[in-house]
Image (tube, rainbow, N blue to C red; front, side, top):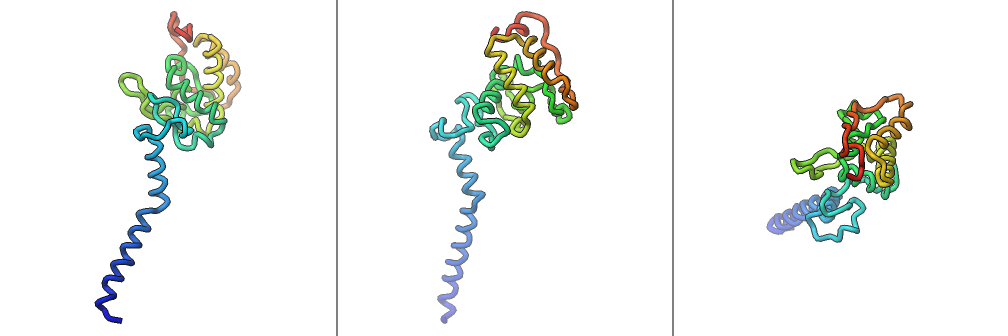
Length: 182
C-alpha cells in the first residue's frame, strides 16, 4: 500500500477515537444533568428533584432515598421554607459530630443573605432518623402545633437514642417561636 494513503487513514482513525471519548457515559450523564437544570426549559414536573421554581433541584438520588419520594420532597421543602421551626428541632442520628446544629442542617447546606436556599445537604438521603424527625415536625406544624410543642414531642419520641441529639437551642419565648403559623 502506498504511504501517501496511510496518513489520511491514520487521521481518520484518530478522529474516530477522539469522538468516541467525547461521547463517553460521563459526558452523557453530565448532559442529562444540564438538561434537568432549572436554568433549562425542560418542564419542571418531569424531574423528581424539582420542588418549586424558587428552590434548587433536590440532590441526585432523592428518588432512591431512605423514604419514599413524596416524603423526601415534603421534608426538604419544609426545611427550606420553615427554618424558624427547624432551627429549634434537634436531630438524633449523631450528625452533630458532622457539625450539624439542628435538623435543618440535615437538609439545607447553604442559604444566601436573604435566606434563600442555595444548596441541599445530602445526609438526609441516607438517614431515616433525620427524615422521620423532619416529617414529624412537618406533620405537627401542618396540624397547627407551635415550635415548643413540636420540639417537646420529638424530644420525647427520640430521647432514648444512644447517639444523643444535636446541640440545638430551645425556642425563644415569645409569640413568633411558640406559634408555628405566625
